Length: 189
Image (cartoon, rainbow, N blue to C red; front, side, top):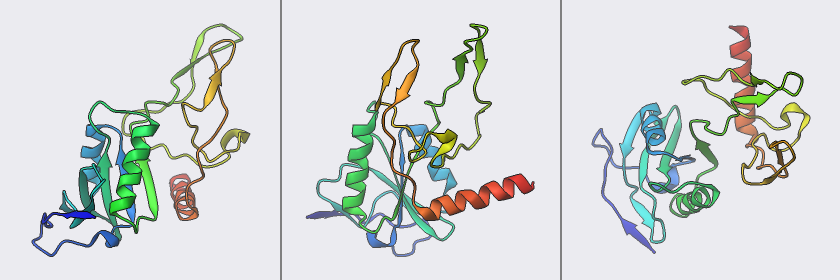
């Protein structure tokens, strides 16, 4: 069962059907959803033509390049893998043609410092700054896995270090190929 909504595109054209959206983007925080909307080449509106009755997400619809994108954010004040999974399941129920799903955020889980065992001092692990884009890829650092560690799937060991015990799945091959091209362009200058 579905509910209907008549929100139309900026240009006054007929809204796209849900089946025409093939990329799903989930933003954990409201300001991440604002940035996601700013990335759209064309804004299609805030509501799909139809929506699964169980779907509690609010949406931003649009286009980036040749891809029609549906953006959802997590409910205010709710974080974590359960909330993200629920948002993704609801999105797929209303937009069954989604082929690529993205969880895009500010990278709050990126480690900033690590205790240096030799000097017992702190040293910076990464030089990542606001506005940088960080993209994972499978098998980084010889650890295997899909390129993303699930932050709540691991154990703390002596010294406060976190040892991951599981990984998320690898991204689709099309995205991995796109990352390779971006890396080549970056290295070429």
